[in-house]
Each structure stands twice: as structure tokens, then as C-alpha cells.
Image (cartoon, rainbow, N blue to C red; front, side):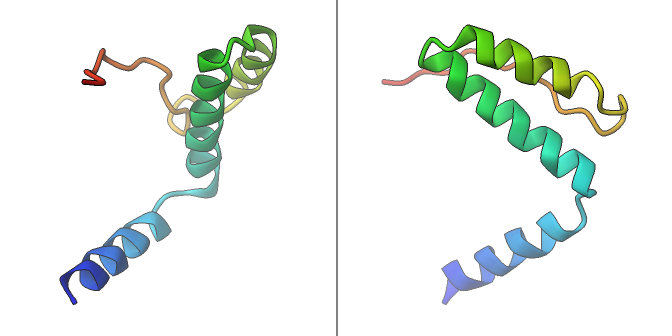
Length: 69
């Protein structure tokens, strides 16, 4: 039962995110995945698209190091 309540809160929180910001976050995720698999050219093309988003709706590609252990 607790998992369902948590899931509902996450879904409700996502509703408050403007569509442009959600799209920017999805682009950032895709760019990171493309770089992870070595597709730098495609990632660069998507990063160019991301730069067209208004600064207040743009997501960041910067991420700190995290352990995979």
C-alpha cells in the first residue's frame, strides 16, 4: 500500500512540470545514453536542439560522479 501512495505522489509531482521542461529532461537523458554508448555525433545534435529551449526550461547535462559499485 505504501508503494502505491508513493507512486501517486510521483505522478502528481510530474503533472506540475511544464511540457517544455519535461521534454528538456527527456533530451538530457537521451543525450547521456547516447554518449554512454559512444554516439557522440548524435548526442551533439540533440544538445544543439536542447540549446534552443528557453534558459528557464532547459535541463542541465552536468552531473556529478557517482559510484557504480
